[in-house]
Image 1 (cartoon, rainbow, N blue to C red):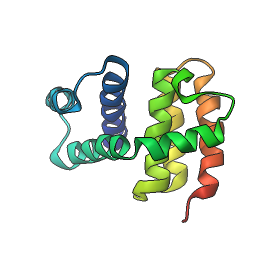
Image 2 (cartoon, rainbow, N blue to C red):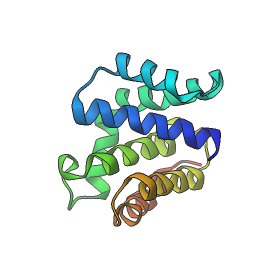
Image 3 (cartoon, helix red, strand yellow):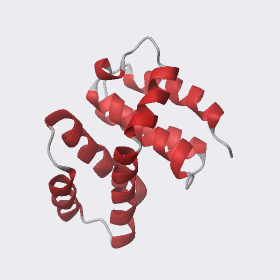
Image 4 (cartoon, one colour):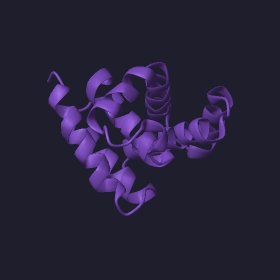
Length: 135
């Protein structure tokens, strides 16, 4: 597993805990980072993903509503919802990785942590979202 992938896994775990259990990100993130063994640069990358998603959650969730209209955001499984949030942040707001990389990473996270239908769902939504990317 690549180091950036490991950072994305950590970001997903943090977002999941914040979203599903309601824990404070200021307590969750340092705990996960301490256990992860990520280097400074990759820990910063994971922190940037988490804070970026949380700061832009309303806008990101609107994109999910637009591109998955049959699924109210609250009814999308917590794992899938946060995988989509991470990837949409990277595709539309962060602009630090190629769109294909963000989509592939999200599909891999969905294969690992989601249900059997998660990878196809995530890929479909992100394929539509990628049309908005300005690169």
